[in-house]
Image (cartoon, rainbow, N blue to C red; front, side, top):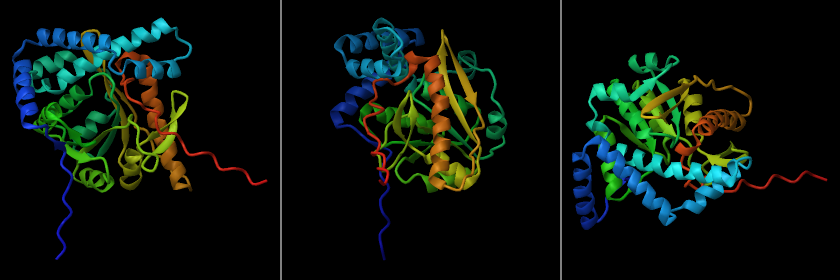
Length: 308
């Protein structure tokens, strides 16, 4: 009898010392007042910027994406990214501390565009999102609505990420590992769950499709589009962006899957449409996206030579 293949864990914990130190820091962080946590996040962001943590990567990405902006403008955007990421990291391990009233006051949804009806009715739906604004607080909002949803994620490692995963699971989020995710995504949809995936990180060329992103081809996961094709579930793009002291939930969609004869072309075109919507949101809120990520590090394959 063949033994089942062990599923890779959602999180690889850090070592005992790291878990002890991070655990103490997380308990202290969660004890602080919200205003103090925000000031602490700003301090951490300032230190990371001054130390130059991936600053060159961020500035190079911004120069490629916004050649029309001055160096000073791009530098100001990059500096804002550090503030946004530090605050998002804090929210990732403290969002459950918000009361329902505080969450309602902190988050505004201008127009659900029918997504709320699907979610509340336990209808299958796919949601594409990005590392923009506060993606973890977006998950908290969905969970507080009673939404049963699954998130397609990469395996994480380390003591801090262990707390992030713990917070996600406590909110009722089912985690689906990215590699080989399609069958589990479709299964979740058939159980009436919403399936969410952040689609703005680079993939190895063999796993992604290359679609335009800020004028350059970027290897992008087609998993959302593949699940839409197989299941027929509607697809939305959702992001939680910061506007002053509040978060604004931006909802776009549904984004239809156009059936064409060529399956690969159809997947690529749908993935490109989702990516274009995300790019539009990043252009509106450029200091809230993950410019520290090497999004274009995987080069597309060379175009086939024409026969002479």
